[in-house]
Length: 283
Figure (cartoon, rainbow, N blue to C red):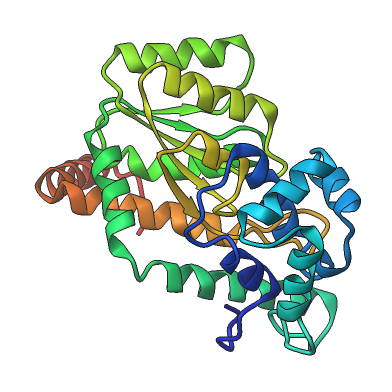
C-alpha cells in the first residue's frame, strides 16, 4: 500500500501469487512481473521470458500454474489490475520528492505486513537460539548486515558478520555451524549477488535454517530460505533506497530481544555499566 492506503501496482501483481507454491523458475518469472508491474500487462510472453532469463514455454506453464488457460489469459488479468490513474506512492512534486514518498509507501506496506506478529516472533526465536549467530550480507547488503550486527552484539553473545565473498565465505559458514550455529540471518537485496545465493545453498547443506530479509516474497532468496521476511526496496533514484529493509532488520532485532527478555536485560545493563565506567559517550 502507498501512504494513502491505495494498493500499488506491485501489490496488485503480488496478490496474484498469494498462497500459490511456485517453483524456483516460476519465482523468477513472478519477481520479473513484480519488478515491471506497471508495464507487465503489455509485455509478450517472449519479452517476459527474456527479462526473467527463462524459456518462453516456462512463462506459459507459469500462467497455467496460476489457473489461466495460457499467457494471453494471464496478460488480460494483468490488464484488469494494471494502474489506471491510481497513484503509486504519490505523483506530486519533483523526482526527489516522489522517491521519498515512494519510500513512505514501502514503510506503510511493511507496517501492514507486520500485523502477523507470529512470523516475526518465529524469526526472533530462531535467531536468538543460534549460538553463534551468523549474519550474511554481501555487496549492497553488507552495510545493513554490519548495522544489524552492531546492535545485535549488545544482546547476543556471539554475532558473526559474513560480508566478504570468495572461498573463505564457505569456510566461515561451516565454522559457524561447527561452533553450534543453527540459524543464518541473510540480507539479500537486488541485484542478488550470485555468491549470496550460493552461500544460502551452502548454509542449508551445513544444516542451518535460513531466515531471509529480502525485497519481495518471490525474491530468488525464497528458494533457499525457510522463513522469508519481505521489505520493498526503493528504485526512484540512481541507487536503491533500503529504508524498509533496514527498518525490518531492526524489527527482527526487537523480536530477538523479546524472545529472551531476561538475558537481553542483563546484557544491556552490563553494557551500560561498562560504557559508564569507560566514559564511552558524551551524553
